[in-house]
Length: 303
Image 1: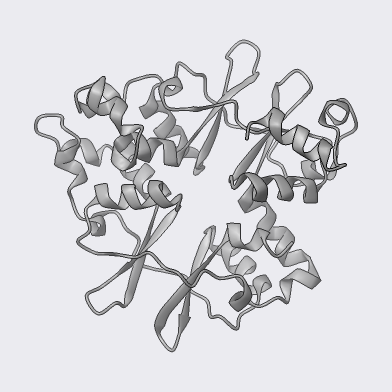
Image 2: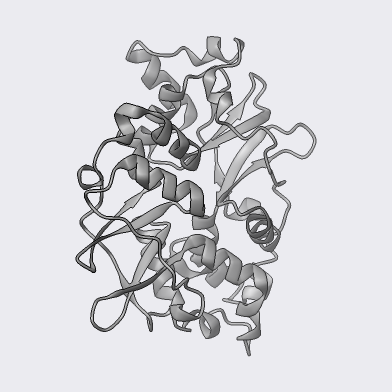
């Protein structure tokens, strides 16, 4: 559903008239939003976008017209990983660039960005923004004025503080919102397979277990972005074919320390841990057994 379809959907349900709201006052969503938005032009290279994500520790970059600052797309860490071998966008690297990652990574970001991303006016309430994030199953909403210029962005992470501050939500149990179905990988799993798991399931992280099924760490999309940005991946190349580096085991880029929680913990405690450690998910443990995971996206379901 594109932005226009979504706005019509809300109007049809008797909700917000976006055309009117775009010209109105600043709403409460701007209290949570980042106003100094990091954006990139469509002509930036994919590697430039990777380095920008790594430098600013973000997973999403609005793509804007360099002259007008109007929103024309968005590129995410998933798009980068998809291009590098995780999904359909890898066909661009395979076909157009003959698997040569050096050539592909210097292509313009417009080749892999998502066009016509869902955006919102600055007049929305917090709950209206949450409803859109949940219905669209996305992790961020660029905020634009009536001319389409970007003047803010709100992400799922921004709502974690709201969970902690809302007494009726903070006391709810992890057990009611955690994911019991867990997709894991082993220390020897190739980076390429991790990328496919992330893109195929729209995951931002994959728990890593040892041969006994014991949790030993977590690998995230941000870990992959940092690995690409550092240039280490290119040091593994001989012919320039990405497969030479993507078959390396995930243990070389994963984080072995994992902040965990338990099913009888509260959402407020989870939110506090996420804020303190700047993370988006906590594995759930029971009697030293890994039984599930709770993510920042899961916390939205409590509203």
